[in-house]
Image (cartoon, rainbow, N blue to C red):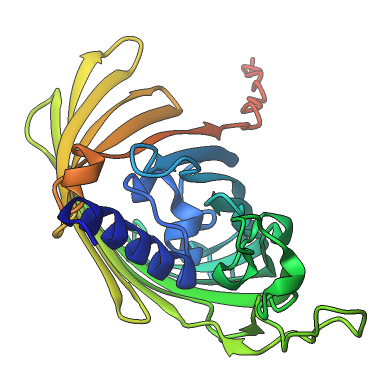
Length: 352
């Protein structure tokens, strides 16, 4: 093997490992609240919230890069058992797709969260919630080619491969995610929240590898079984108002799944560009440990928040990535529908 081929081999091995433990992740994790923590459903002031995020990764390394769109809608719907408590619900869907064979991981989930409010003004909130829904993993088996399927002329003949027929087109399963978030408003200028969530809590059985079959006619292979590993997420954010126009929000994220760890620290600054129109510009940087530098920009225009991020790859893959990593765009909008206050006039009738 020539030395120039080693980086390519390393990339292929890395991507193979990622495919085995394929699960979504975003650089703008706070812009995707439902994939960050199920307890975020309904945790905002407003009638409803709709949003979406899209990520593209490794376009500089492979011809079919990771492509991850996600969308959600959530809302606080009813009051809880206590006067300041409330219940939030949400719907979330996403699809992660990568590789020449279109390895895809998709989900559609429903979530519900109970928010416990403490204090006279409800400035401290403990949120506990979960998701339930269906997930699917699939692959285009017609695009798969195995080494032992090539004949002496270099042509691929599926019947020659012992692995032909062992890979299944799709696997479906139901899944449960759980999470909790603690929020506290310290004073008029500072607040924070920390959260913890577990995805794939029940570790459902799934596999795209079957028992195999002979090249000739015969029964279809039966699905194998592999326990889906849990993904543990810890995250937090601290918001500070440095002046009337300037805010600073340091954040962190740690998640792990079957020994694959991700650690991100970020700092996002906001500047109130137009107070009358309620326009705040945002910019910041972050660092994904041993992997990438995050460049973040965005804006908040009244109830609309938009953001974009770019990952500058600084890992050992730079020899083939040329420092190019992932790109994201995201937006969410809070809908506020309030009943107008009805003032009943009082007519004073003076006595004579």
